Amino acid sequence: MMNQEEAFVKTPEFVSLKFKLAGLGSRGGAMIIDQILLTAFNIALILCLVFITQSGFTSFLTDSTLPLAITIILIFVVYWGYFFVGEYFFSGKTLGKHILNIRVIQDNGHSITLLASLIRNLLRIIDILPTAYLTGIIMVFIHSRHKRLGDIVAGTIVVHERNIKKTVKDASIEKEIKSRGLTKESLSIDDWIVRSFEMKEWNLLKKYSERLLQLEDTERKELTKRLASVIFPKIGLKLENMTIREIEDTLLTLYLILKDEWEFE
View 1: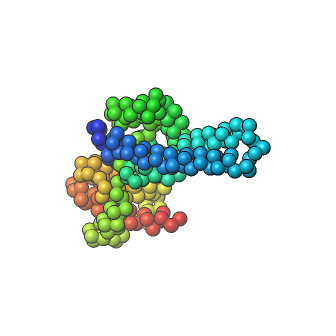
View 2: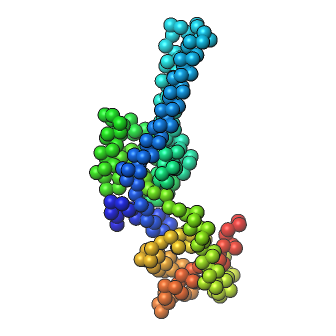
View 3: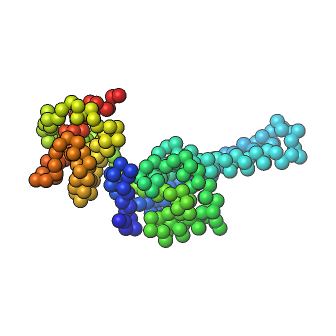
């Protein structure tokens, strides 16, 4: 489910995440910042070319187009490489996106991949046509998820960055567990049962615990019941007659227990 400003993503770990889509305004603002930076670089590069050709250092190339060809190639490589490197190596963010607190992610909520970043940015060649990103602007404006052509082909979306650092600092899951008075002793479970859990199940429980405080009530209840239906049979518990709070407490306690088994291996 989705509207023009929000996207709900179900990750492979069964975690439901809600993202606020970046619209034409924020994406356009980020692009302007990036273009100013790139334009400054291009001007500096051209000035260097003029200085070199006028200095006499390259007098042997007076009638050659090599310096100009090298400059054009450098401008092209830096322009397209800037977006590719920024989005792939810096968590989906160029400098403009970082300033406006938006980033590129995959449709499944994961970080952008090397191939997706490459495809997305190669297709700028089309999105930039006929001038000033007109094709891209039109696509972002009319698409339900504010996608330009590069996003559609690469399977990416641009979203507003959530202030996760503040959430972790002020209301971390460890703090929540402590406030509920939960300890490993809150759940009686045999050692052989603990050792029967596999990495996949630990990852599900870890993702659930890390995201729990970021979810809205409806999503939180749905995810809690779904995970409990997978985990509880292994520890001999049934969902019947348990409140959502009791189910959450049980899952969080199990998280504490399994953390000692898996976190430092």
